[in-house]
Length: 187
Image (tube, rainbow, N blue to C red; front, side, top):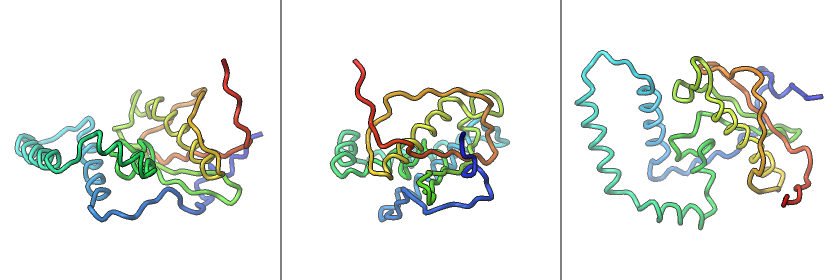
């Protein structure tokens, strides 16, 4: 029997997790603006000539490219500092791909996230792409384990899609650890 209590939107949240407020350089604020551009341009229909805006965005991108460390350097710093959560494609405040989901941990250890996914996450018309749905499941299960002291990577994730997940409507995703055991590797 599955406890659907955490899915109730009126339930309220628990303690916020994975929130990083240190943004000295303004990276998170910049990422938020890029996310806005991404959302506005996905399937965009505009009543204006976009060439002047494109030129301005290109100029900003050129300036960022000139100021940025190499991909190799950024990756090395991420892994040497252990600060990979900010780069995560689901909860990463410095990753423009990350959907707008905020996770709380409830008293019973359930990790609960709420989000409203925009058109940039759409697969079939009006529905979130199934790959994004499984991405959300993967991260909620991994973060739930992490917050109980168990770490590791997903080895197997089986998703049965029983109904479409709507875009542009609030959704709730939950996960919790049900066993502290790690399954032995299969040969």
